[in-house]
Length: 252
Ligand SMILES: [Zn+2]
Image 1 (cartoon, protein in one colour):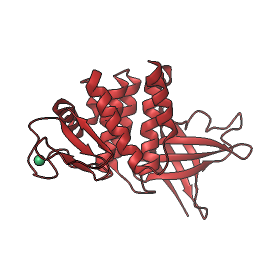
Image 2: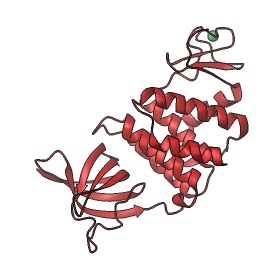
Image 3: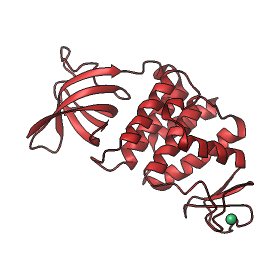
Image 4: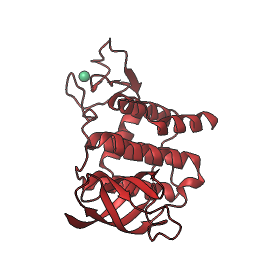
């Protein structure tokens, strides 16, 4: 039994029993895990407003016999208040939280992923291009989690890409240059060399720069389609946040 502290981003929160809240958090030192904030929904709780979905807090946890650790203190560091002002921003923030929630193993720390998520929320809150921020962070998560191909070379001839279109076989996790493009698998998509260059840049750029170089038009569309193909391939069921974002894109 022990007390410990961590910096956490709250991925989701739901009401539990009369006054409690069940949380899924992503901790800088402890990775993703579930916790309970007892009495957090009482009007005078000291936890009120300190640990909300899509916010960054410093939290003290109590690890007892239950498999859910208990929040004993929480201090909000950044609530990202401008994210909900724009539906596309909110949609991408929800997608990124879902990606971590669904793809990350419990209690597996990843300082890099923590910084990617924190920087992405910061960039969304600052009003940078939501899709560019979401794609840069989203493809980075897929790469860190090992769910993406080597974007730097053709899976058949192993040469770096010098021309497009590049054929992406999501099912096999393979990429082909125009000379090697394989026929067959139904889950294939083509992207331009320009789109691939954006993707390669995102995997190397400092997370604090997410969204500074905006992608638009066809590049935005094909990279968005590719990202969700990989994501749907890796998650057992479609993400609710994906439907939300898809509806917003349809309205725009
Ligand atoms: Zn090739």
